[in-house]
Length: 537
Ligand SMILES: Cc1cc2nc3c(=O)[nH]c(=O)nc-3n(C[C@H](O)[C@H](O)[C@H](O)COP(=O)(O)OP(=O)(O)OC[C@H]3O[C@@H](n4cnc5c(N)ncnc54)[C@H](O)[C@@H]3O)c2cc1C
Ligand code: SF4
Figure 1 (cartoon, rainbow, N blue to C red):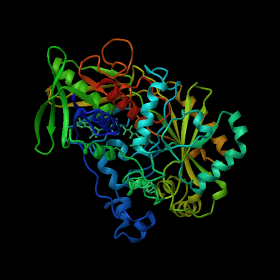
Figure 2 (figure 1 turned 30 degrees about the vertical axis):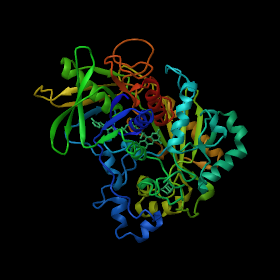
Figure 3 (figure 1 turned 90 degrees about the vertical axis):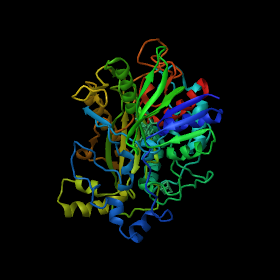
Figure 4 (figure 1 turned 135 degrees about the horizontal axis):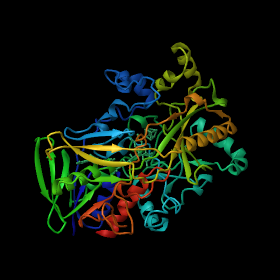
């Protein structure tokens, strides 16, 4: 039995831990681990919440209306609901500063994916070209993770981009808007395929059949506020599974600061702030696995080197997917009513290759059902009365394609640390800098024009003034700061994700990606974490 210390209970940490536990190892998990408020009236549907809750306005918008979004095209156009704010709470003592990048951190039990939308797509060999292994190596781990989280998928046109693997569940019922889009696509698919467009079901981590204590989705329409029946997968469910193992211990309420190293470059101790007792603590470590999220794991690594040597390193190659939101109007649904008893997030995905880049572009199509509509109303360049009238009548016809573009590791995109002005090693600020590729605008403009044409063929229009390029950092697919490679050298990891700088240190979150394809990365991160637990320990 090997003793392993894991930092972080996000998607990567919990799946690493579960695989290690299944192999009989002893796992201790340290985490800040802010926990979720209880789910309000789990038996209620979205409509019940609106009509039966004592104060539904506070539930949806916050006691002081803090989640109302005012229009600002340079910022995000929606806000997280009040009951999910705990996910993004930052502990005292953690400081960051960024340029051209709006980072989101999570110190929650389960991490960022407690707020995710569940899009889970395996990388194919083209996506993995710069990784030190191919799809066949990852396939059994994708299958294992699909089995653990419950993953919906279909064999359709879009699966040409996502390799087929076992343990996929049958799809959910489509909402009306998505159904019309898919039917129209099927009628025109030969033409659209000739133009390079493929449409099909998105792969989503949601149950269409019961699984243990988790129930199949019953279309309550509450996804955005946290699924009350655990149909939509979140990492805290896997953490609860880990907690059933005798040789697992979970220590929340600690902010890990740095590790200590001996003269043989082996990590001996981990130093943390106990957030409850408000004092520093230290534990002995045999094997350390950092799964604190790319930015936080990078900070722990940088702070540790700084403490040990006085050197301030720069980690190059930070990546994130640029995302563009293309809102559209399905003309055949204008003036019709919408069904609130629907699954809220994306159910369709679109894939195409852009002539400006040889890389695949990935889109998820979310139609508007129970999500709050005030951000849409406020974006309209009309007076409030007209905008409200229009939004009501257009509600069921509205949808958005979230286009994702790949990213590459580039030297300009860095994370480093800055000591406080007194020069004390006590607290540092994480500094993040990001520069987009020079021809990004041309690539995005060409891709959005093609998507607008594609939508027209499907009977929908995308008003150009509503197209929104999300700020860099918004996709929350951070990766690339300590990449995997087969070549030796510092500031990277081996193909088994062992640090090339410290022998008993491993990274299993996004830090180790050598390339970021347009597809959402978390499914691959979880599969890779399970692979490392299986191969190394
Ligand atoms: C709204 C939203 C939608 C998303 N949708 C998708 C999607 O559809 N598909 C997809 O693939 N991805 C999606 N993502 C991204 C996905 O959530 C992340 O890729 C994933 O959660 C990252 O997991 P992680 O293991 O790297 O750690 P994180 O989720 O970043 O969690 C970090 C963990 O480490 C702990 N921690 C951090 N620092 C310390 C420290 N110093 N000491 C102790 N503990 C620490 C935290 O408490 C937390 O438990 C979405 C994200 C958001 C916010
Ligand atoms: S996944 Fe969404 S629609 Fe389905 S049961 Fe959960 S909250 Fe309701």
